[in-house]
View 1 (cartoon, rainbow, N blue to C red):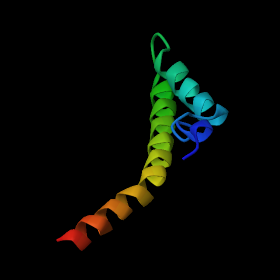
View 2: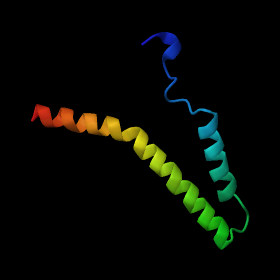
View 3: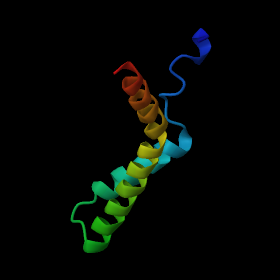
Length: 70
């Protein structure tokens, strides 16, 4: 991999940073209401799904590779 491309995939883009900041803003409110908790849960679930979709292909590839070695 060329030196100028190393580490690029692990750096969050602007939209990912914005989502994390939105989640942090919701989590850091002083006294969360039920609405705040629901909003935070929804944001966290959405982020969790994005992370799962991003790592799923790698996990499946590792699983197939480990099966072929058995």
